[in-house]
Length: 288
Image (tube, rainbow, N blue to C red; front, side, top):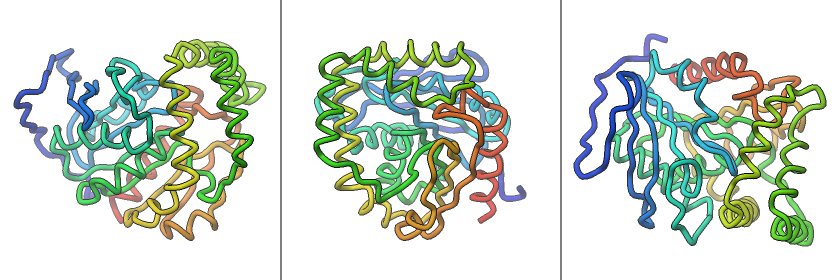
């Protein structure tokens, strides 16, 4: 812990828009590489900075309990990827690479120099690609229920069938998919909240992002993973096995911490447990 040094939080806002929401939180916007406005919030101060990246058809509010927990000792940042939350939707390219540029824009605008990226689900792929874009700023990576198998292979006909189902009825397909991501004993209030949020996502964003996800996993993830030179720790549910040995072929530092009895959304299912495991992972990365 001796290496976790506080520093003054400074950033040159230049022509970007800022609005003080409270003494603890700042809201901001930055323009991504393709001209789309990306919304983010910043709290606290201290290194390493923690940048939280949400998953498919979600938004930064899913990290609220993590931001509150960590803002006392870290600069914490959560962004809405393009087409999600309060970010703008005028994007034609819903790829992992495009989303990684959203993260890059926020990190550079805030001039964060020692960063741990924390990505959930789709956000895990985004953080891998973002780390390849700004390696000099990245101290480590933490995945949350993501990156279970770098060699996962889904036949193209299954992908095509999956995408066609979402094109035919996005709401029904999303609802069925989301419900399958919870254990049978999950809190029904949490399940219904997540179902409502994710079925309300714009279909053009949701379907385009699914296509981008499959393309990245199939063609680009393993190449990108081999470029990662910092620690990667995943905190994954026990609903699906994490292929540790397989993943270490691409990132030798890969480690996993397992959360038992939760589904795909531990940040809202068991936030206290996730926060404790995140704290452990952050310390491991910080102390090297």
